[in-house]
Length: 435
Image (tube, rainbow, N blue to C red):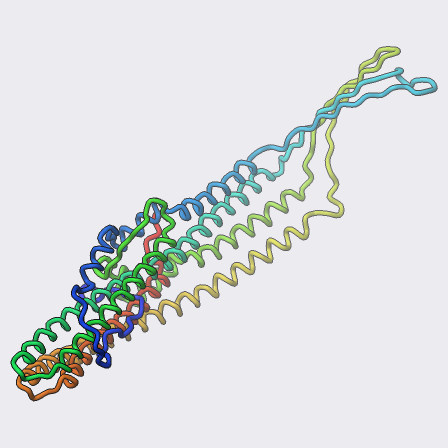
C-alpha cells in the first residue's frame, strides 16, 4: 500500500456520531479528548516493523517454537552412533552325575554388532531430513502467527483511527456550537438549536469512551499474540503501519510465493524425508553381523576355553516390508500434495491481487468524487445557516453527510487493508527473520 494515502487498516469503523434527539441534559464541561490522551500516554507507540522485530527477538512463543528444531537435532546425534555391545556373564554348577568338563564353571562373552552395510549413513540421512522438516514446520507456524499478528496490528491501528476520527468530529461540533450560540445571543436562532448541538456532543463523547475501550481491547489482543514478557502496553497508529512490501506485478508475486511458501516447502521436505525413511528401513533389513568373543573357565579339574565367531540374523520373514511400503506411500502423497499446493498458491495470490486492485480503484474513485462534495456541502450549509436560510436540521444533515463520507472512506481503506494483508500472507511478505 503506498503512503499516503494507502495505509492498511483492518478493523471496521462504526458510526457513533450521528445527531441524537434533543434532551435537556446540559453540556459536559470538559471534552473527552484530553482524558483519552492521558489514558494512552504511558503506552509506547511502536511501528509494525518494530513490533515484528521485537516479536521475533523476545517472544516466548517464538523461542519455544525454535527450541523444537534444537530438540530434533539430537535425533541426528543418535543416528550417528554405533549400536552398544552386549556382555554375557553366566555360570554352571554340577548338580549330579559325571561332569563333562568340570564341576563348576564361569562363562563371559562380548558381542559387538557391526552395521557395515550402510545402515548408519541411512539412519543419519533420515534423521537430518526430519530436522529439515522440523525447521520448515516451525517456519510455517511462524508464518501463520505473523499473519495473525499483522491482522491484530491493523485492528489496533484502526481502533485508534476511530478514536481520532470521533475526536475530530467532537472538535467540529464545538465549532458548530459556537456558531449556534452566537446566533442565539443575537436572537437569530432558538434555544432548540443549542440543545441539539449539546446533545450531539454528549453522544460523541460517549462514543469516544466506547472507542477507547475497543482500542484497549484490540491492543490487549495484540499483546497476547506478541507473548513478549517485558511488553505490557502498546499503541499502534495508522502512521506506524508498514507500506505494502511486495512488487507491483502479479506474476512476480506468484513467483515469489512459489519460492517462499512454507507449506509448499514443508510438503517437498516431507516427500524427501519419507524417501530417506524408506531407504533407512531397507538398509535396516539387511543382516547386521555381530562379532563375539568369550571365555569359559571350569574347576574340578580346572580348564579354560576361549570362543569367538560371527552371528548374523536371517531375514526370512520380516524384511521391513511394511515400513518401506508405508514410507513410499507417504512420499507419493507428499508429492501429490506439492502439486496441489502449487495450483492453490497461484490461485490465492491471483485472487488476493485482484481484490487489492479492486479495493484500490474503489478507494481512489471515492476520494476523487465523494469527499470533496461532502466538504463543500458542509461549508455551504454553514453559510446558509448563518444567513438564516437553513434550519439546524439541515445544517446537521450536512455535517452527518460529511461524517458518513469519512466513515465510508475508512471502510474502503479497511477493504483494501484486508486485501493487502491477504496478499502479503499468500506471498509470504511478512518478516519472519532468518530463513
